[in-house]
Image (cartoon, rainbow, N blue to C red; front, top):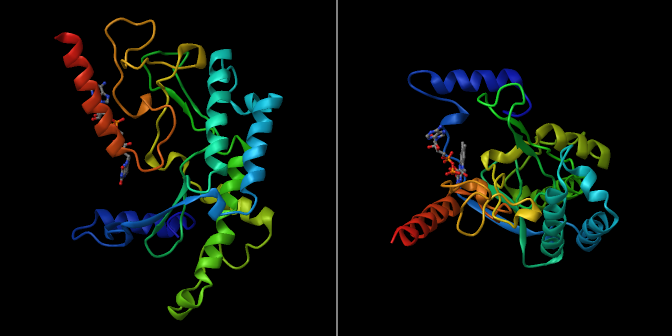
Length: 259
Ligand SMILES: Cc1cc2nc3c(=O)[nH]c(=O)nc-3n(C[C@H](O)[C@H](O)[C@H](O)COP(=O)(O)OP(=O)(O)OC[C@H]3O[C@@H](n4cnc5c(N)ncnc54)[C@H](O)[C@@H]3O)c2cc1C
């Protein structure tokens, strides 16, 4: 309801900032989750993986990148799609996270195929950067996320869940056919889920990379990147632990360089 009911959302925010604080934003949410390979979500997982390869081979994939993407960025994207296709068809490689926290059932796409951009504001380079998420730009992302809804329904239809009196509130029983499910997914999706990354990727420069394996920015003196932006792909998890590892590694690299 926080995603779909504006009145409830506003009331919940007011309740959170009230003294004493109350409402749904004060609830501690679930700390259990399953990490699912695509093979556990849809029987079409091999078809989806081969569509990724087909997109890359035919050149179609490049059309899903932000307008004006350079040849090097296209090359890097094609290389990433190769890795991601292998991940999608691997029945032991998690590409989706489903936390258990009570309703609503939610899922996080851990290996998105779509790409956004972060650019300087051409009018004022000192202004906030222009951020475009590009969510669902690659239509296969929608195929993957939409296939999660029937899976959730089948989990919540098991006798165990039924015995607990589970009632579907989202997407809701009126959302049935594939087009309705996709429309609901598009409306309910939160871009990035606060895990933005990979905008200054550690990859070869000719593949759109920004830093080398010493974390130094290509073509710039005295500048390293040590944050979530240097990841080349979103890890199959939440991002903070990986950021700590990047920070530790950066410290090691700098100490070694100085000594
Ligand atoms: C609401 C929310 C919930 C999250 N929950 C989880 C979770 O449960 N588990 C998990 O693993 N991850 C979670 N994440 C993601 C995780 O927090 C981030 O991926 C991670 O913190 C990113 O680290 P970072 O070092 O790249 O950037 P940040 O942590 O954003 O660090 C950037 C730092 O740079 C500073 N800074 C910015 N501009 C300047 C400037 N001009 N000069 C000096 N300093 C500057 C900022 O103040 C900030 O301290 C969550 C994120 C959010 C927003």
